[in-house]
Image (cartoon, rainbow, N blue to C red; front, side, top):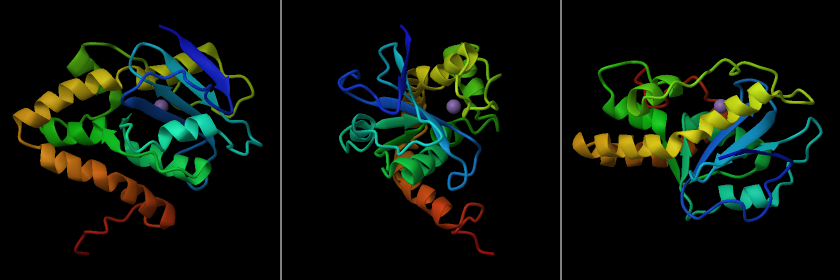
Length: 205
Ligand code: MN
């Protein structure tokens, strides 16, 4: 189990077959405004790969884009909406098909409004993760060990969370709704990028 740090692209062949957990860190939360700094990716076997993009990056990352754009490889996210939008904006790829642990949590954990990754990992896996580095300078020339560790931990538990959430989705009969939501997320991300970030396009008023 290790955290691997790479500049500007993922090395070829470092990921096993199957679903990959994906997360991003950017200069802020506006996908059209804020530069993509880091993509974290894990095949769930215990290693995490961090791909860092510099301020003058051309985002020419063929190995990473091949994985993200592979229609046969499921991508697991926590709050896919942001990651999809920022990667579409900077890498030019829509990283689908999608599974979102936050969306799944909202559909089955209807007894709480706490759907953050930290709460989810604590309740479903019994693990405490720190969110201390969440708001930090991801554009810094050197990322600290604490930042790297935090970034890696954001993809470390998504495969295990999916297993637990899948059981709940089955138990509660919510799979069809969940799948429809996952399938809509790339379109929701495109609406964000196209200028409808705060609007529920299905709302009456
Ligand atoms: Mn993150």
